[in-house]
Image (cartoon, rainbow, N blue to C red; front, side):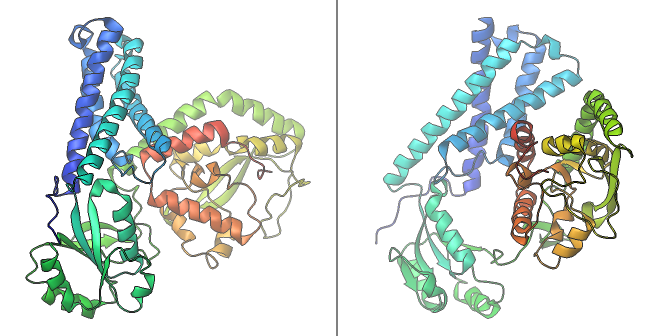
Length: 471
């Protein structure tokens, strides 16, 4: 078997870093072109805030684009979705830059025409550059470049997932040519396109004879005797060896490797929203809630008058809910029902529920009854975006029926969330409905990003305030 040609970038991180630098250069070029389109003059002839915004947005793009998945593989993905991610990521960078200009009282000096041209040329340049890179890499791969040959040791859940991703993600440039699988895992081998290595002792000789570049060990932690044997058998292997612990079988919120007391540890249920980005989310929540409460104060007054006029009782409905890490707090809503007693049991609202007032029906249908929860956000009990908090009785019921149900409370509950914009709102009268909602909530916690919050807010604005299940 002939040796494959050299891999152009020995580490995918090198390729990503170069792409990030290229994006900065591309956006800089787009800004200068936008200047000629808008001013018919070089950018340095415009007011200084334009140059400041250029440098700021390029720096923001360098750090924000990776968080929004801009450098993920395009193979196997829906192209319009990938271009949509590019458009929204660039828009987010510009919005943050505009907000900075507003804070330093220079936003009035910015040319809106230049901003418009920069946004459009930025999108065009970023998209064209990516198409050129994609086609270039495709050509190089067809010539045998940019490929590393790999052997997977272990073919359980993680081994199969690694193999699938290696096939799908062309950017990585990996070719899995052989797999070590015991008799049990051999049942998962459904393609003859690669070699099966039957014993651990054969791996080293196969690696040497077939010019293998990397070995991926995906054995589960329970296979510690085999791992010890591998350590000895591969002691003289002059190739990169990666151990990918079989974490897919564990139901966890994260698997981030961190330094703890000087030793590498894996966080199993620490949400990705912790840390500096989480602090930024907290500040944005406070700012958003303050602006929303100020802007919506006339709406609050009108709703309060309607509630008092149509039925006796308080304007607000208050109820105890679980918040971050199980801390109890009092949630606020506009009252939508007549005063009644629950007799130690929470009864969900149902279709044509006689307890709901006429104005309450409208408030529930449009989710306007949820607006007072901006007060909870301002108090720090909730976030604008996050898993919806359920009634205490439902928590007690479902924590025994659904795995990781209470893991939803590892983050602050939200006014709107990933489940809600996908239609999972309103009554949860079956276990299946609640299970589906929890799955979406856990997906949000595991994959959270500021861009994801932004998408949820935009989606909520256009279609998330009403639904057939809200009554």
